[in-house]
Amino acid sequence: MANRVVMDANGLKVSKPGVDVLTASMADLLLDSNAQMLQVLDSGVFAGVPQNATRTVTLPDLGFVPLVYFYPASGFIRATFSGNTVEFFSETAGTWSVYWAIFNVPRG
Image (cartoon, rainbow, N blue to C red):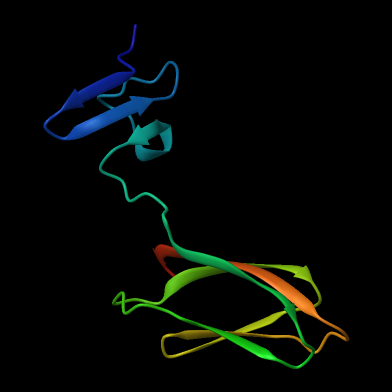
């Protein structure tokens, strides 16, 4: 029977069922405590924004351009990057809203 869990000086690893954790590839691991975990650095919502208005999020200096995810709650939203800022804009008639989140992984 294959070992599925190991914790040692290298951290904690859990493999998929039937895969020996000691020889498992990254694709066969369910958990590797040494792997970079996706974390939300900041998030928010801009709601009820008037047509043609811009909303800006200033990013911290992380040494890289982070992944920014946004989801329009209403309207068609455009996002642009410039330096360390993200600008959200919409020409949608009436008001618009957008949910956004900044993650700790470089945008690639």
